[in-house]
Length: 408
Image 1 (cartoon, rainbow, N blue to C red):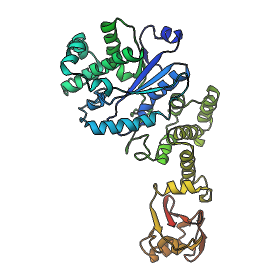
Image 2: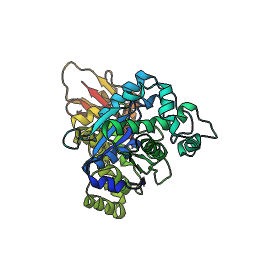
Image 3: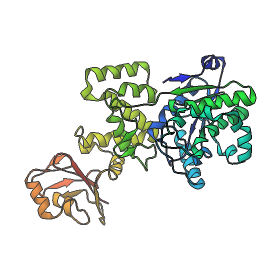
Image 4: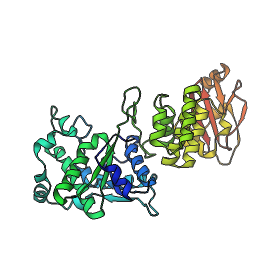
């Protein structure tokens, strides 16, 4: 994962426990999988006996980092930024241990940035940087043709000031982040040297691109979020299942804590039996369990196996069926008492359940052999079918079109 580092960082880490931080701006209501590289950097820092700090940018989030962006980021209002910061805190807690001798800490830079006066900032921070120095940084240089506002131009100094304050308040001597953050991080190293004569260091991790040349974590539907309300556990699981064979060995190393031996075995599986997708399954199970919990990961795995023809609907747990309601078309018919058996026609068109346009349409599809209910192909619309867990029927029309009927 190591991409760049300042001279002397190895010696710093060998001396003893070091406090190191990564920043996360709450400009969205959730982190996404692209944020996981610096998150895992903090995880490895903690596993090596050091002290990780996650800085939530309640202050910088109101400005927005220009790094890696072709245009100006919309300004967020303070209430939204505050709400987003709280959500991000909860998500980071799934990766870092906040107890013990190497307990992680969460700090909001709003503590010092929102109280700082403009004149003080210009005198105490701005005087240490020339415009020429700032123009050489990639985050600024890449935007010179399209234009960059003074607001985003000054973001580098805000992040540098974060490092200075963390050095003063908590003895933080290391900042980690993506390689696009190198200019911002080293500006903080320079500010600490000029203001306090102190020594601080930087480590950056590579920006992850797919083998196809696209940005990691971006799909046709947008970003893959850690918040289940924005990206469901099932779709999160599917993202990892669909990883290219060429990418999965790298992702196993970046995003999981599997052993060298386990990863080596999965590497061999990719090389020798890529059709089994064993490595993708291991990656998807590990990541979904870490982000959404074991129960959600198991439900996603069950749903995936059934919808892609690798398992029978009878294997679905009640939790998986509850989750499935949010992933495929679902129709529900309230019933006065539990009824564990229904006719095929009732399942597809009865009461409030409407999976087909009409009874005639349903009968015609059944007669043509194009309907399966709970994994059984049906040929008689009046045939009785036992419901899954006494209340669900999974209907497949054709090869890949699924619907779920519920009698609750």
